[in-house]
Image (tube, rainbow, N blue to C red; front, side, top):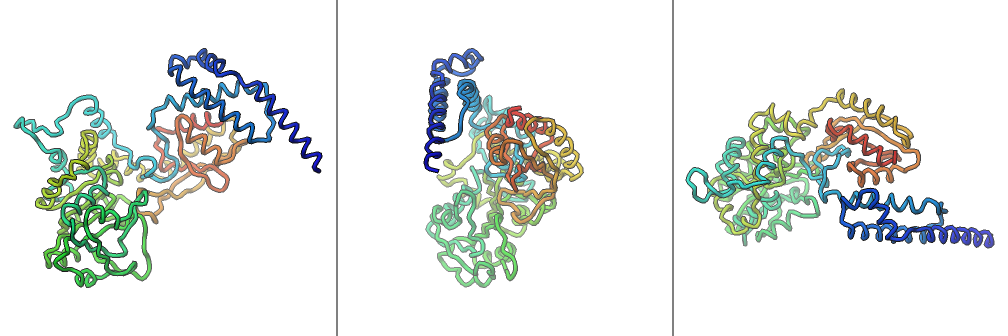
Length: 480
């Protein structure tokens, strides 16, 4: 047994040596790639750097593997690998990706896609100048908050509004303005952790306020809040638990009750609703139940906070609406300059809010709402078409259509599933994880999920006009 092992090792080493001897020089690789046109697309110094990196990794892989290599193909393989690496180098750092995960508001994929009108508005101001802080009528200095404030007043019924970089920034700025050095009361059942391990208690601390927890994880009553209000209390904060659910023996204090209690004791109430639902009518378009901004304003909340890049379907931002006196104080906070948004965000947000003025228009034009509204029959029809297209690609062993469960995502209604259809794909020579990796790093890039040894591509999160690009991505991933 020992003698056989030694012989195999010797043979493997001999193959490795032969493969190493046939590795072309960096100069030969560069010249071969230059002849293929890469010298016109990428600086020679980059080609040299990438070629060296590929060769180094290839040498390391030979040393770490006992697999036999066909030495005659080493040069061709390395040219191909360097070319693939150069394609990745040539690609923009941030590029469009096909979302086949079934998660519509995928945080890792940038959450909400923008409506066409928002993209046009963004592009219109991106290449030139725009009156971000110039009042065109008077010629004097203007306030950037006024660019979208009127739209937010109309859509939510608020007195005033201001926009910052994201909703965590909105909460930080609000607490820094209203509650620095004083107490903020929060139910224990609402001490949420948001994406990236940012926890509400830490945000409150960063805003300079002191957290006062009341109630228990599953039950909090109005009396819990009332019993701790004193001269140090700056605000009552209600935070929507958007990324988890507590079920069973539960009790929570609704925003109207908190407002009645807070105002009876002279304490302002802040409502962080999270996802960005503007009204009850907008909430009706979504699965599950999400609080909406207009209801909170009508209930008397002094400040309401929400994201722009979730179900609102706009760019990443945090929107602060509420009573004018409060918003004016928040806008005057020195931190506002560090958290304010630029002309690109304001342009995209303004166009998105304009769309939301007509609910039916929003249903058609806001991509997330449009994806939610796609019928199962339409998804089945697309799935059938894609099965035919994918079945013709060499390297695919099987493609099946199966029911699937999609999710809104982005911390919104996490337990609420959305009926969908998916493709279950297996390759002849690649495992599902390997195929998924090739698709992620390919052109175009596709992000899917692996389940039960198959690649699962959910059509609910894929746009109709991406089908052909998806097929092309699969063809490239399989080397067809």
